Length: 162
Image (tube, rainbow, N blue to C red; front, side, top):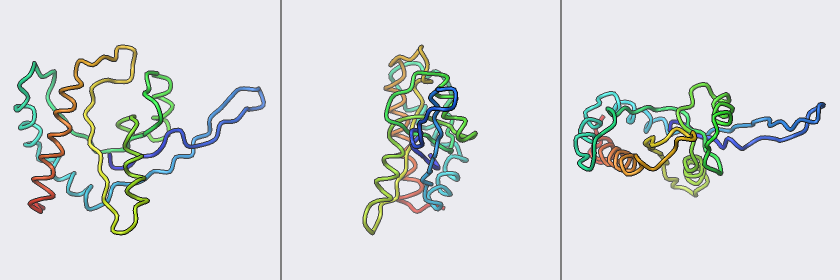
C-alpha cells in the first residue's frame, strides 16, 4: 500500500427522495516517500518474486507472482459485495485492494509519539471479495506476503541497498 484510507469515513444522509446515500470523505495516509522509493526499486527487479514462488513446496502454484504498489482502502468488515467494491473503487480510480487492517496500522504509526515508526503493509490476494470466496489460497497468500516482507527487509532495509 502506498496509501490507505477508511472507506467508511464520510456522512450517511437521506436525500430528497428519502433514499439513504453515503457521501465519502476519505483522508488518505501516505506511505513514507523514502520507503516507497525503496519498495518501487525492489519490485522492479522481480528476482525476489521468483525466489518466493520457487520456495513454495506445498501445492501447485496457481500463477506467477506480481507485485503492485498502490492505494488500499480499509474498512471495518469483510466485503463480499461487487457493488460495494465498485463504490469503494470509485473513490480512487487507482485502488488495488480493499481490506481491514492497513489504515489502522498507518494511523497508529502516525499517532505515535516521536520517534514515530514508519508503517508499511504488504498483502497477497487470496480472494476477490465475491461469492466464490474460499480458503484455498490463504496459506499461499500468507507465505508469499510474509516472505515478500522478509526479502524486502533483507534487501532494502537491513543491507541499506539503494
